[in-house]
Image 1 (tube, rainbow, N blue to C red):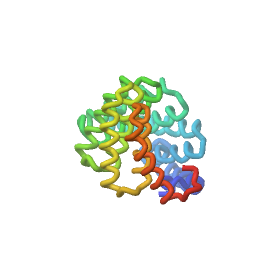
Image 2: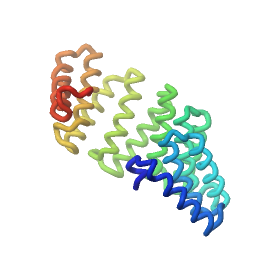
Image 3: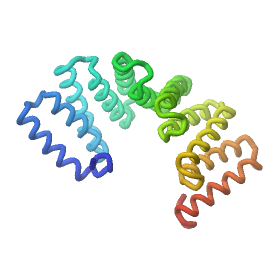
Image 4: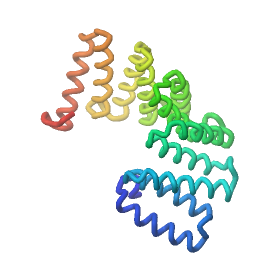
Length: 242
């Protein structure tokens, strides 16, 4: 719970105490210990202790592979977590094969259209996107989005996030017509979910306005800028950095 609230300084000693108890009761190689290591690593990463977090994830991976099997679903979870830690340290060449291995396990265990598969697809696409491998990232974003829509429906906040990822990769490839269409769809979703005066709506209005501005459609961009500005002023006050 503390980890989810980013209260890492409070969470850390509790994880360390839990680990000490589990290692004493079950032994240092038990899968329960591995699960706690896996959960503890993001806390250390959140504190900037990326190297120690990576070591914990690697230890957890070895333990889970030994205690269970190399294609167990928990192995995929740990591979995904370790890949994320490596990605955060810009170790892209090490992270990519871990994401791909995790994806292969998840697809084999759950099938190609499971939400867990969509999560790893999205993570791998973000990695490729960050390396400017847009043509490789785009189909992964599209597949993750299709799964998200099938599972959650088109108006779910997670689907809106997936749409935004796809939009950005389209923008980076100069596919502005499709990007505009998806921005307008995202805007409609956010207005349906959050209401017309939510900061998320303002953010999408602003991004759409920038796109229209770049397309020299200034008469369409201006009212969107104005509406985004009005929402931000209402939410944050007129002197806020936003």
